[in-house]
Length: 474
Ligand SMILES: Nc1ncnc2c1ncn2[C@@H]1O[C@H](COP(=O)(O)OP(=O)(O)OP(=O)(O)O)[C@@H](O)[C@H]1O
Ligand SMILES: [Mg+2]
Image 1 (tube, rainbow, N blue to C red):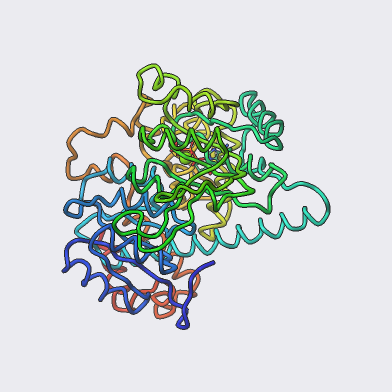
Image 2: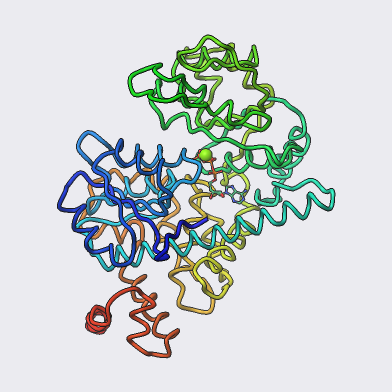
């Protein structure tokens, strides 16, 4: 649920190592939001663990700390905040990487406070919508349970290509068993969705699905995250902590990015799997666990075993059933189906009418090779929905990498030096176009009443006047 305090204000966390930026942002935003500030990852995580933060605005480079690591850690929380990353002007590749890793959006420094605020509001609206959808899903699950039918998890995994049909069949078959499942596949192919579907269809839907991102934590933290620790087990362990395995008891644990786990934790995990017991760090008392284990990786674990980077005995324990997610370029039949589902989703989220793709746009989507797979397609469709000022979504509204040429890996090739215009050019991420659209919509909604429109946008009437003047002169 959205965290609203008495004033109905959303809770923001601003993370930046520069005091002036922190304070400046807080000052500018505290009228509309409740703001916490932090200067490094440790402080930020402490706040995120104790407060129900709705949105985190974090700098990318903070002394020794990196905003990307903070993002990774935040995403392991039960209720992660929506995250907007602040990056230096022109660092498109890092910004894109941040979005791939789960950031909602990015803003470039120097910051334009109105833009930041508008983006925050948009993100929070999206979150509210997500919550609505989650709530609906919960209600549906309950209804299905009451009517005696098992809840589905497959409807979220869109695709009717032979490869996806095969995956659906496999999930249906193995979900009710206790078999350990290894999901392999490139980034963005839907591994996490598969893990969710396996759990949802496991026949134990009331039990928990606990997810751990193994790449996000240092070895020591990962160990205590998985197995828990006793008070005093190490410096900083001021209280006993129940680990994720114990939390997942009776349900499913999903170990994401399993290829990243360090040798010591590999040994402990192997023991947990073979003996079905765990020991909290700092304790010798075994705790019995009854947990279904699902793991995922975008690496080839067998190759890692061959290179001595992953224990063979652990690999065999994890690889009881393997699901290999096909890259999107190998199932082009699914592209339009997926695109249409995302069109619907983003029209709803952005409160816009649902528009069809025109033929040219559909063709471009099918020709592109999608190195970032379904995640990349989803982002491209969001772009199209937001940019379209027409009755359909046409090629002009899609990100420019689709129209330029169809060479592979547009995104991973962005380490060429960025020129001044590259942000807009490479990613077609055009904040001012977005702003124009949003303003036009607000004016339309308010029947051209500028005071009301400014209110809708969460900016002052004066700022709106100035923006309208600027836009006219463009
Ligand atoms: N078949 C699908 N149908 C609908 N949405 C999908 C499908 N596959 C992936 N997605 C969407 O694409 C995004 C990426 O999916 P997901 O996080 O499951 O990928 P992943 O394989 O775990 O990627 P990574 O290796 O980067 O963690 C999500 O927004 C997910 O909802
Ligand atoms: Mg994943």
